[in-house]
Length: 314
Image 1 (cartoon, rainbow, N blue to C red):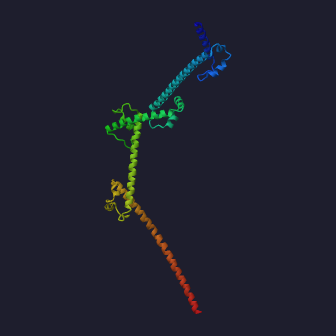
Image 2 (image 1 turned 90 degrees about the horizontal axis):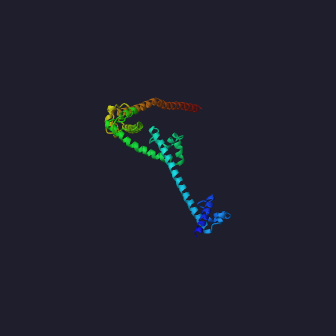
Image 3 (image 1 turned 90 degrees about the vertical axis):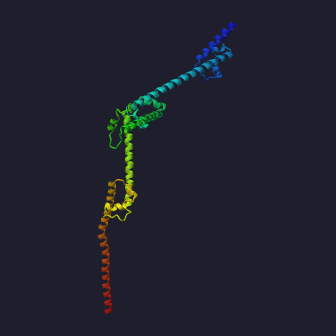
């Protein structure tokens, strides 16, 4: 009986060897299809049917385990490679950020053109995650800059310094350098803050100019409704008529009020002169037709008189 066990084990080992030699067997193979290829092999014939199936199923389980292990290793390797690619792309963005070539205002299209030839960019593009990583990095840069911008504004407020139109970046940077509260903030961030503050001042000036223009137009319109103001009226004479007007009160500067009034008077004078230039021409044009009409009537009258005289003579 012990000898039978040994012989059975040997037969199973040899059949296992046969299975291992058959490269066409995969974890998805089915016994009913596989056994057909073993009909003539003595190792197949030497083992009984049940042992064949037992050995085959054990071998198939091992193949499944190896396949799963290989897939797991492949997955881990792929994840590791993707992580390395992401880290290299992250390092690339940080490098460009330190150089001042990438900040929270940078657009994806501009940056992708800038790094198009870089290997780290080419590698991340294959993963299809480059744009998302870029957006996340930009969000981080924006969050960082918001904090730095707040620190810069606080520093300027403590120094009593205010942005105004015409200020150059160099003056702005000198004001900040060495000031407490802005240590570690890069020169590029200083420039971004300068541009943001300067843009606000430009917008304020545009708003003020628009407001001034609207107020000016309202005062011009109001001046046209005052019949007492003529081309000969002086500003001093007109003030009593202007004081009650909201459009006049909205112009706070005396100089601006006088300038608008002077322009209005100039317009009135131009109109008056235009009327005067037209007047003689109009009068002459009206007189000539009447004279021609009168002359024509005289001629016709004379003609009629001659006809009557001739008729009477006859």
